[in-house]
Image: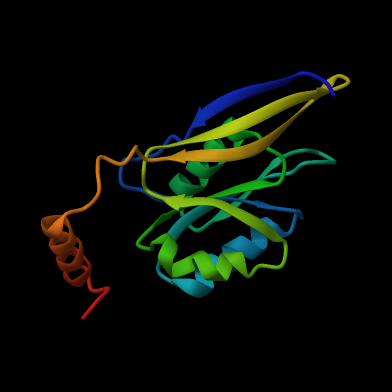
Length: 167
């Protein structure tokens, strides 16, 4: 086994923007991810980028918003892990699209779906003159600051009702 270097790649995005990071296995994924987004929340704005792992090894992208598409391309390039994909969204939340994305036949896994500050833990190896990268996992947000108390529980329940997720 050759040398492996570990890296942490920070996701670059506006503070409150949601994204989904996953792994897939086929070049048509970028089009299927586009269709999943449009079919789940037709008015959502989004950008999708996919890192091709063989052949031309291009970052392939789609989306209905150029700014979000460019953001997805930039982050996919920074991550550079074969067959990884990233979706940035506005006017939609991962909750609205995650099951549809998970049900795309070529999607293998989801690493995270969040708006938190996120770092992607990457392993990079060398294959002859070529390098390869894989995602080991993510660091999503922050370390817990304790166990919720009665006031925290009341806040959580009120918050979910205020945003319309509970009666």
